[in-house]
Image (cartoon, rainbow, N blue to C red; front, side, top):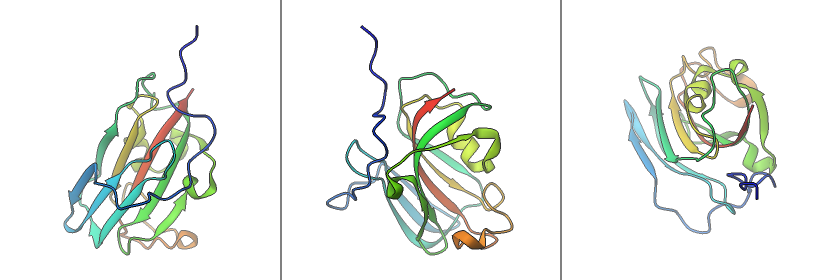
Length: 161
């Protein structure tokens, strides 16, 4: 009998937690702080920012380790993720809101996303607080990201190839 995949292939859960969950990771920045709770099978992650939140070094934390293969730095991955701006705590992008995972090659995303995913196991849920240099050093106006903004992501790694 084949082993079940480490995560559901049904998509990304879009429901918000019904109550404020206990954080799985808290981080004080150079300014502000962040508390992150990863997604569950039925709810999206929860990211609370005491803004403005800023880090001087990218920080990665494994919220829940997976049991799949290790993700190579050159892998193409399928992930559910939520991105929050540390400047104001706003969600600027979310596969959870869309209800569908995103697929992309790791060598085609910002450095902070690469640092968060490469070396993790498929099935892991991770959080990253990335410096502007590892995110969008010149900003990304379409997403409301200004130069210098620290970005926080909660990421569930569904597949890698």
